[in-house]
Image (cartoon, one colour):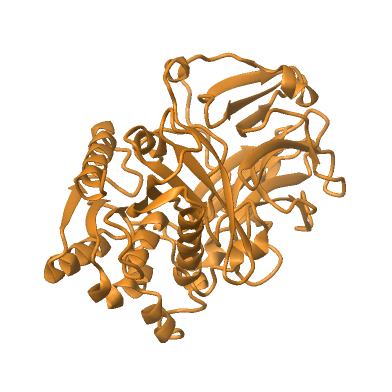
Length: 479
């Protein structure tokens, strides 16, 4: 009978990731708060344990001391460094959100170095190469490509590959082969294998799960660019109805991505969250703006959402709509808008800023920021985006909140949410619904029991969500 080994160490925090060094001598783990809420930055750190001298009575060695939320740890092949990436917070100084960055830390000294320092986009994910370097995917604009780097001082070199989106890259431990997921707007997602990172153009698919999509008349799309009022260049994607690529004067659905540190681009996705193809198939030109706050356009572009958490990106989006109307692409009399999570925030805000949208579909989006800061599980970035805590920036919390401008709303609005959502409390959706009812604006509220923010408890819920959203757009959107 196998008896359980004793614990090598103890921590008061919740362990979020764990890895053993290649030589088996050390264990590393990264922590988060016990509540799984962002209570204190100090609860998110990397620790190591010497397994040759381990004891539950001996505290682990804390390696990092910063204001970052470290994640995805892996021991380097040298048994000395630990790789990690950071999406929220700062390794270098006071808390701030940048595009996702890649680092490694010396497990003995705590000295931290940033990899891909010369890369202006976001490092999406990484894998350790056989030579001790890394292969990674990186987003620049609407493309996600493969890059390689031998050491933190070397350039982050783009590898020759197809246009589109590479995801979940994984390098073999004992060979040069790499595996990845790849897709484009019109090429469905599959898993591919390449004999080495410099042979991406010769990669071959090893799955054919989505071949049925390739047999359909799919929507076609392309990037679209415009200039904001302050001269900043902004980009997004256009998804045309099947058979109407580059047609003009089309009914348009503005579909806003969440995050906000995300972006729409040249990739294939079709689910309850990303249903642009379903909307396009129903006759909509789908406009997906990569507004200020999106990733892939530099840290400055991403940070310009601070402290105007909805008003600055809101201007970007409406200016994109204006440009599409001016170019004769969108019909100004047949406009709709929607989004989920942060896309819901923006939808809720924009229906208070203009009456041009005939229909809105919003999900899991806040309409104010004080209760949202107090109720959700990501309080660090809530306060960061608004430039401070509620009692430090009371006016801004008010001015950037849709609820205080609800009297301007004229748009028929459909709302969805998970009853157990702790990322954006369902109370925000009740508040929006109550405001619409009070104003006599057509609206409906669909709450999924037992669901959190990601609606992943019951697959029927996602199907019902999109079905009802499409019906709402058809009823009120003007097509």
